[in-house]
Image (tube, rainbow, N blue to C red; front, side, top):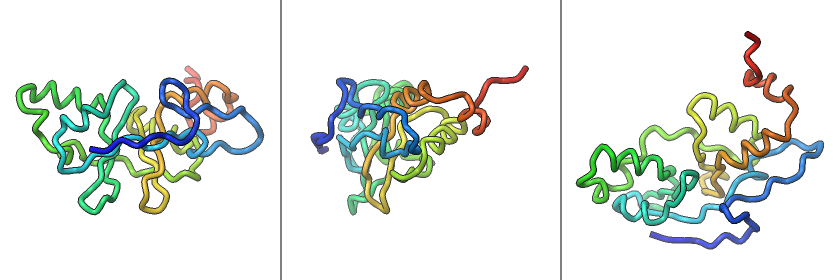
Length: 164
Protein backbone atom coordinates (compact mmCIF):
# COMPACT_ATOMS: atom_id res chain seq x y z
CA UNK A 1 0.00 0.00 0.00
CA UNK A 2 1.51 3.32 -1.10
CA UNK A 3 0.44 6.95 -0.97
CA UNK A 4 1.86 9.62 -3.25
CA UNK A 5 1.68 13.34 -2.76
CA UNK A 6 0.23 15.41 -5.53
CA UNK A 7 2.63 17.95 -7.03
CA UNK A 8 -0.03 19.99 -8.87
CA UNK A 9 -2.45 22.51 -7.39
CA UNK A 10 -5.74 20.97 -6.34
CA UNK A 11 -8.93 22.10 -4.76
CA UNK A 12 -9.77 20.94 -1.24
CA UNK A 13 -11.87 18.10 -2.71
CA UNK A 14 -8.79 16.73 -4.45
CA UNK A 15 -9.54 17.71 -8.04
CA UNK A 16 -7.61 19.96 -10.34
CA UNK A 17 -9.07 23.34 -11.12
CA UNK A 18 -11.06 23.65 -14.34
CA UNK A 19 -9.24 25.91 -16.80
CA UNK A 20 -11.30 28.78 -18.14
CA UNK A 21 -13.12 28.13 -21.39
CA UNK A 22 -11.26 29.30 -24.45
CA UNK A 23 -11.04 28.35 -28.10
CA UNK A 24 -8.86 25.28 -27.59
CA UNK A 25 -10.29 21.80 -27.24
CA UNK A 26 -10.41 20.55 -23.67
CA UNK A 27 -8.48 17.34 -23.21
CA UNK A 28 -8.51 14.70 -20.50
CA UNK A 29 -5.17 16.05 -19.23
CA UNK A 30 -6.84 19.41 -18.53
CA UNK A 31 -9.29 17.90 -16.03
CA UNK A 32 -7.57 14.78 -14.70
CA UNK A 33 -6.19 14.37 -11.20
CA UNK A 34 -2.89 12.77 -10.38
CA UNK A 35 -2.82 9.21 -9.12
CA UNK A 36 -2.41 9.59 -5.38
CA UNK A 37 -2.87 6.09 -4.02
CA UNK A 38 -1.65 2.76 -5.30
CA UNK A 39 -2.35 -0.75 -4.05
CA UNK A 40 -1.16 -4.14 -5.26
CA UNK A 41 -3.52 -6.54 -6.99
CA UNK A 42 -2.61 -9.07 -4.27
CA UNK A 43 -3.36 -6.73 -1.35
CA UNK A 44 -6.50 -7.29 0.72
CA UNK A 45 -9.45 -5.00 0.08
CA UNK A 46 -9.03 -3.50 3.55
CA UNK A 47 -5.82 -1.85 2.22
CA UNK A 48 -7.73 -0.29 -0.68
CA UNK A 49 -10.51 0.80 1.69
CA UNK A 50 -7.96 2.59 3.88
CA UNK A 51 -6.86 4.65 0.85
CA UNK A 52 -10.25 5.43 -0.69
CA UNK A 53 -12.34 8.12 0.94
CA UNK A 54 -15.34 9.84 -0.60
CA UNK A 55 -17.80 8.88 -3.30
CA UNK A 56 -15.56 10.26 -6.02
CA UNK A 57 -12.22 8.75 -4.96
CA UNK A 58 -10.34 5.86 -6.51
CA UNK A 59 -7.15 3.91 -5.87
CA UNK A 60 -4.97 2.54 -8.67
CA UNK A 61 -4.44 -1.21 -8.61
CA UNK A 62 -1.12 -2.41 -10.02
CA UNK A 63 -0.06 -5.90 -11.02
CA UNK A 64 2.96 -7.89 -9.93
CA UNK A 65 5.17 -6.05 -12.44
CA UNK A 66 3.72 -2.69 -11.29
CA UNK A 67 1.62 -2.34 -14.46
CA UNK A 68 -1.70 -0.49 -14.04
CA UNK A 69 -4.58 -2.95 -13.82
CA UNK A 70 -7.54 -0.70 -13.02
CA UNK A 71 -9.24 1.34 -10.33
CA UNK A 72 -11.10 0.51 -7.15
CA UNK A 73 -13.67 3.04 -5.95
CA UNK A 74 -15.45 3.43 -2.64
CA UNK A 75 -18.70 2.54 -4.42
CA UNK A 76 -17.22 -0.80 -5.52
CA UNK A 77 -15.92 -1.45 -1.99
CA UNK A 78 -19.34 -0.66 -0.51
CA UNK A 79 -21.00 -3.04 -2.94
CA UNK A 80 -18.69 -5.95 -2.11
CA UNK A 81 -19.01 -5.20 1.63
CA UNK A 82 -22.79 -5.40 1.28
CA UNK A 83 -22.61 -8.75 -0.50
CA UNK A 84 -19.94 -10.28 1.75
CA UNK A 85 -20.14 -8.44 5.10
CA UNK A 86 -18.13 -11.05 7.02
CA UNK A 87 -15.13 -11.56 4.75
CA UNK A 88 -14.91 -8.67 2.22
CA UNK A 89 -11.85 -7.10 3.87
CA UNK A 90 -9.83 -10.30 3.33
CA UNK A 91 -10.60 -10.59 -0.39
CA UNK A 92 -7.81 -9.55 -2.73
CA UNK A 93 -8.00 -6.37 -4.79
CA UNK A 94 -7.97 -8.57 -7.90
CA UNK A 95 -11.56 -9.56 -6.97
CA UNK A 96 -12.81 -6.08 -7.92
CA UNK A 97 -11.00 -5.86 -11.24
CA UNK A 98 -13.62 -7.13 -13.64
CA UNK A 99 -14.10 -5.83 -17.13
CA UNK A 100 -12.76 -2.32 -16.56
CA UNK A 101 -13.51 0.31 -19.19
CA UNK A 102 -10.73 0.90 -21.69
CA UNK A 103 -8.40 3.56 -20.25
CA UNK A 104 -8.31 7.04 -21.69
CA UNK A 105 -5.26 8.88 -22.96
CA UNK A 106 -4.27 12.34 -21.70
CA UNK A 107 -4.78 13.78 -25.21
CA UNK A 108 -8.32 12.39 -25.59
CA UNK A 109 -11.04 15.06 -25.79
CA UNK A 110 -13.45 15.46 -22.88
CA UNK A 111 -16.21 14.40 -25.26
CA UNK A 112 -14.66 10.88 -25.15
CA UNK A 113 -15.24 10.86 -21.39
CA UNK A 114 -18.87 11.87 -21.90
CA UNK A 115 -19.31 9.08 -24.43
CA UNK A 116 -17.99 6.59 -21.83
CA UNK A 117 -20.32 7.99 -19.18
CA UNK A 118 -23.23 7.54 -21.57
CA UNK A 119 -22.42 3.83 -21.96
CA UNK A 120 -21.28 2.83 -18.47
CA UNK A 121 -22.33 5.67 -16.16
CA UNK A 122 -20.28 8.39 -14.51
CA UNK A 123 -17.32 6.91 -12.68
CA UNK A 124 -13.62 7.60 -12.21
CA UNK A 125 -11.65 6.53 -15.28
CA UNK A 126 -7.98 5.60 -15.54
CA UNK A 127 -5.74 7.73 -17.78
CA UNK A 128 -2.73 6.00 -19.34
CA UNK A 129 0.13 7.43 -21.36
CA UNK A 130 1.44 4.40 -23.20
CA UNK A 131 1.47 1.84 -20.35
CA UNK A 132 2.00 4.31 -17.49
CA UNK A 133 -0.82 5.52 -15.25
CA UNK A 134 -0.68 9.32 -15.39
CA UNK A 135 -4.01 10.25 -13.84
CA UNK A 136 -7.62 9.64 -13.00
CA UNK A 137 -10.47 11.62 -14.46
CA UNK A 138 -13.30 12.09 -11.98
CA UNK A 139 -16.92 12.98 -12.83
CA UNK A 140 -17.10 16.27 -10.88
CA UNK A 141 -14.57 18.23 -12.98
CA UNK A 142 -16.13 16.82 -16.16
CA UNK A 143 -19.60 17.94 -15.06
CA UNK A 144 -18.23 21.36 -14.08
CA UNK A 145 -16.76 21.67 -17.59
CA UNK A 146 -20.15 20.68 -19.02
CA UNK A 147 -21.77 23.65 -17.30
CA UNK A 148 -19.54 26.01 -19.30
CA UNK A 149 -20.40 24.51 -22.68
CA UNK A 150 -23.08 25.51 -25.19
CA UNK A 151 -25.80 22.93 -25.75
CA UNK A 152 -24.51 22.32 -29.30
CA UNK A 153 -21.61 20.32 -27.84
CA UNK A 154 -24.03 17.89 -26.24
CA UNK A 155 -26.40 17.81 -29.21
CA UNK A 156 -23.48 16.73 -31.42
CA UNK A 157 -22.76 13.85 -29.02
CA UNK A 158 -26.39 12.80 -28.82
CA UNK A 159 -26.49 13.98 -25.21
CA UNK A 160 -28.72 17.03 -25.76
CA UNK A 161 -32.26 17.57 -24.64
CA UNK A 162 -34.85 14.99 -25.53
CA UNK A 163 -36.97 16.56 -28.33
CA UNK A 164 -40.22 14.97 -27.03
